[in-house]
Length: 322
Ligand code: NCD
Image (cartoon, rainbow, N blue to C red; front, top):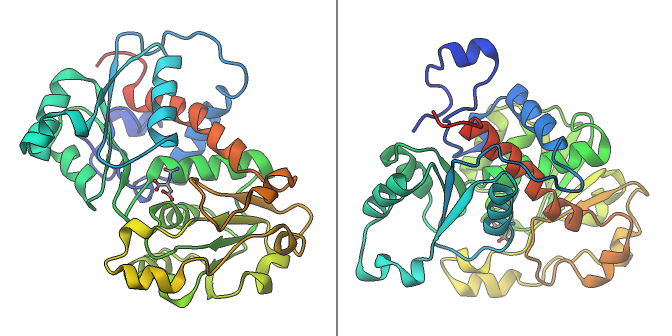
């Protein structure tokens, strides 16, 4: 369909650059567009009211990788706006008979008005967007992008802190393979954080292509290995699990597994107002004992996925059939 950077005609003039747009990477969106998304999402927070904005629309979810939050919050968001949802279950579809991503996408474009796709291969959502005449939202492609998660994460920070600029962030965990961490860092390039500490064991530092991009976009960041050195300076701690499934060699996973953990004791060394975000699911890096801390914001974050994705669907689908 249509991506950022392409001519937008009258849309750009009216400030509404969202309609019909593919959502492949958060890098494709301007700060102004993100702020307008968050303003819309704010209106959907709180007790749900029945809405019919998307009553004549069908949203397709196509998840070729496991998902709880992304798939279900997109589904809930669509249903709350009155849309209908069809779900491609790869394990009971013709993909098992060898159907290609090309042909599956061609089918979904004929059956729906928007496709949300998650796939283990980098670039899969972009490929689908090139094939499809209806917009495609990338629900995560391999270890590359997860734009709606990054939008949700920034929205959560804005709600918790009242701003995204001027804060100190620590992004702790698998900064090599976690698309959520990369996308969050890419999202921060749209703002002006005071400083971003990118904290991980050496083998989980961001790939060169990521640090190159962050530098090119002028993000103020430092690579660190020890959370305890920076937690006292941190306003927002963004934590991810080690993405075991992405390691080309499991021996390398074995070497780093369990290498970092946010215990209550470590957290007690942080600022009193520190907020802890995590895209979930968690593994051993985030023990349940942290849940009772007033800093634990990850459940709120997960729940804000519904209003944020309502706003996203509404903006892309434009609230009426084109
Ligand atoms: C993440 C993902 O799938 O990238 N989960 C999510 O969408 N909330 C994070 C992860 O799997 O660790």
